[in-house]
Length: 225
Image 1: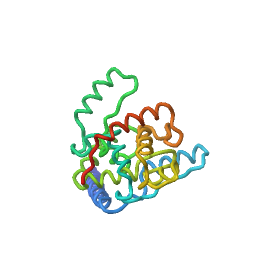
Image 2: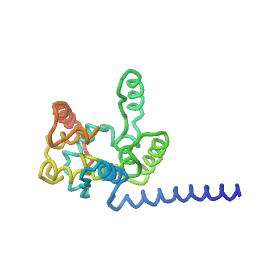
Image 3: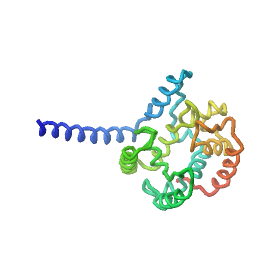
Image 4: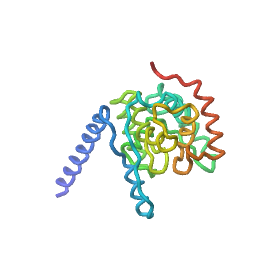
């Protein structure tokens, strides 16, 4: 009986492993229709008695403004095109700083955030962290950097019930992702640490300060030809 249970567990693990590779490989070519976070937020809104909604419209990378690409790289991961999924210098720096900070500072790269947003759940734990490492390595192997950025910009939370560049452009700025200006893009990027608390449509003084910092940093971000 014990052998049978262990054999079942082994095949279950192997099946999940194979499925994860297959799904990641498919997402190399097809749009990501929905993410675990979208579903979790929808359920949370429903439980709270709020009007639940999911605003999400996938657009290809060429229909997303270079301004937004530069803004999120400047804000979230300036070495995105240089590392292989993990910025170990930033991880070390954040670990040292967090010994003195009341609120821990994260050091997740765009690749890590993409892995978490597309495949996992938001609540942090050692299990999720381990799976995040696994999926980060997987997408760095199976996708190129341009695809990672495309999926990231189409899938991340950018407001309450708003996911992706096209949705936030339409909801907050009455435009398309392709036409986002430098100022609008910097506002969106400024909210990304907590897009539910902060709004690019009605920015606080803090977000406006962050916008100014990001606008300056955007000049130093070069995109691949």
